[in-house]
Length: 380
Image 1: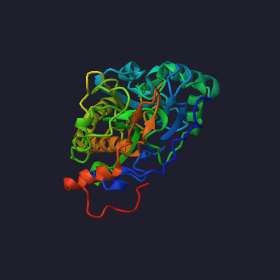
Image 2: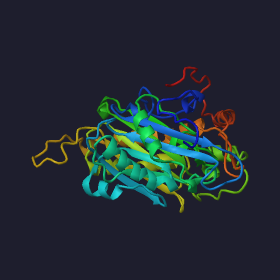
Image 3: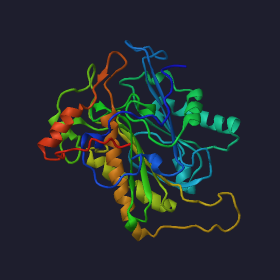
Image 4: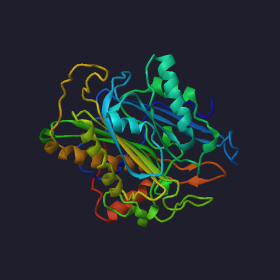
């Protein structure tokens, strides 16, 4: 197996944005993660090996896979919808989601060149390991070629199975993990981030969870809690080679909720994600693949029945709290990815720096956005 041992989705020990005192709107769930949506699980495989000069097929390897299972080990379909802010990227299976309104299996997020391998693996593992019919898998990607031997096909079928078997609820590892291992966000080390929002009584008490694979954005546009952090921290730019603004940059965002929404309403939810991306300075650049998927874990009925199915649907005029929760959680998930990112050296000695926590706090303090006494209790 290439790379380091796989990490599951349930490992987390690093500080998060709230631990640093970054202020956010809304009330998070217990884990402040997509797994706050009951029954949903996440599995991740992180592959890190080699150093020095790029040898295609050998390394260095800085990549992985993140898998989201809407109903855990269950495969009952969920209502779903997708939206693209800018389409220079890939998310397979979206045409059928648009046509049918259903998502049947897991959502896999990896690097650009591994989409085909992961797609085939989901079908093979589903059929031969679990006896499932998963003919149109959903596999999304962002490009990690600045740090990773992206054309080396290091993500393989056994890694898909590993992520599948290790998927759990609870805390979700962030930063240089899973599909986000080799990703860059606003010129700092990016990767996987997650957050959630619990709606109050006026919103029905529902949960909204978001997971992002952040590999997008130009440094000068980076904004955190309304502060122009990218203009305050002008150094620590990626070393060796150059990254043009927007080139090879993308963000995948998955939104989950337990609110009873139909596909057209989930489309409305997915369309709000760009507002959260924009809050942090994402501009949907020309060569960026900004693709978003939203689904509901509320009962969706039997897909193959010939009988009339009775469903519940939240009225459209009750969706504003869900819109707000989606925007807020998307914003925080991106910042969490940045805060969790760790400095990484990859192919040909290319180096990407972590967002320095002390300088982030200094910038927030300069603009009076850091509480005088940030909580010392870590958010789980």
